[in-house]
Length: 321
Image 1 (tube, rainbow, N blue to C red):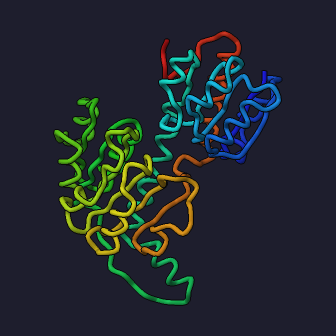
Image 2 (tube, rainbow, N blue to C red):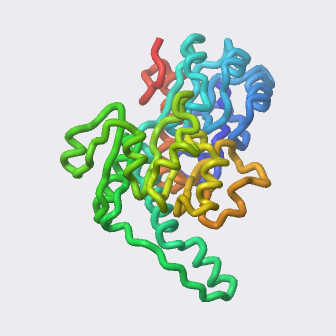
Image 3 (tube, rainbow, N blue to C red):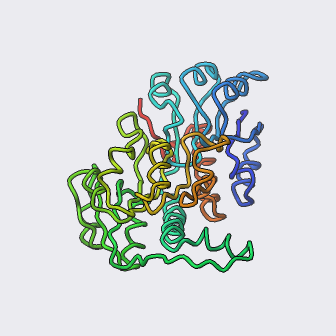
């Protein structure tokens, strides 16, 4: 079998996943993603094609999947979000889409809280001041007693809620699939809509999947209804916000700050509207990039693919047919 491996953190991070892949005996073709559609088209058709994909956030459209057939047997996503994969097309074409739920919620929640603290305490600015030889001290704010709003109370959202309660924050949340037992155990208040959560939050943390319906959810109109000096955290998908509107709100002082691990287009395309705004922090999609999480994701995505090759059930499949 030939496997196209494009996820960068899989390749860059040592661990048992490399041993598992090597021991499989399959031919491995590598590239450094995330890759656009045209590059994926080139790779899946070169030298007779590939039997499987071990992909990150590469753009896998219907056109890419059709070009990879009839040889392609499975698409194995290293990660959880599938918005870069045309799952419906894969389903129509009877190609299993595999993914890795439950592998990165701890590390992403930790990263999320690191961003919250950084904005609330102005750590990013203060660190740069001292490194530049300045002793400029900015007054920050406590998290204790503040309201954290979570939109999307899945695995990651739940871990963020636990940490917020440990910091003495009130937690409000909305999710289509509400876990009442978890909410009661961790004192999380259910609100009837995402809009209500955004309106009431001092800190708003986004943990939704990106869909056509919620693209640009955080926009000028939504921000105008939020509390003054609110903080927005986005460790989900860049497309959930309107970048120009968020930039304006941060520059004007309406928002205390915006911190994210994602952009609508990755990697960053410079010049970018966020670059010159001090209270906007962007990290390069590293929320799940810890040695522990990378190994969990890589092992699961690799085993998923090998199971399909061996005629076994994958550990997790996103589509059914």
